[in-house]
Image 1: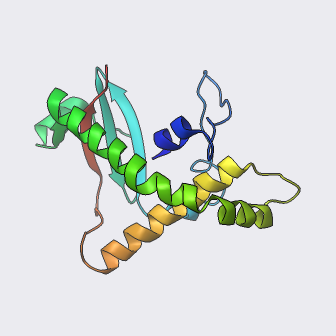
Image 2: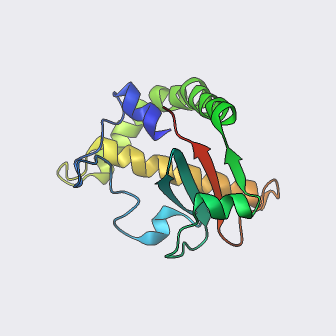
Amino acid sequence: MNDVFYEDKPLIPAGPKRGRGQRYFAWMAEGDPKNAGKIFREEGQSDTYSLISLAPKLTSSRPTLADIRANHGMVLDEAESRRFRSFVTIFCKDKLLPYFKSNRDPMLRLAAQVSSGRYSAFGEFLAWYYNQIVNNTVDEIVEAKRMQSPAEMFAYAVRSAQ
């Protein structure tokens, strides 16, 4: 969803520079950790794969592509990863982005109430707000017993777009 926000531009511009030429919002890295949610996500690269780890508590040792394959983890190769990325992009653009765009004015008013002297940019507010929506939605789905949160680290690999 963040990629869709960045591509669309009216709601969230690319994040501020954070060293090593990277641009991102620090809303997941700074502040109170409880605001990041109960499940943490970490992403790394290995060869031409993105390795994604999800866990209630991340460990210092990241799983490798070989570890994921050895443990019969989900590894999405060329065709599967393209379908996965296409589904995510279409779902975000067609279903989620219209909601945020149609509620832009109420969110701007809410952001103005939170902002003290324009200390935080609207983009940072929306990134935080989106994160809260995701966390609350996951909590409701788990509470309804439609999904179970991972008790330990779960990792998967997706072939990077080339």
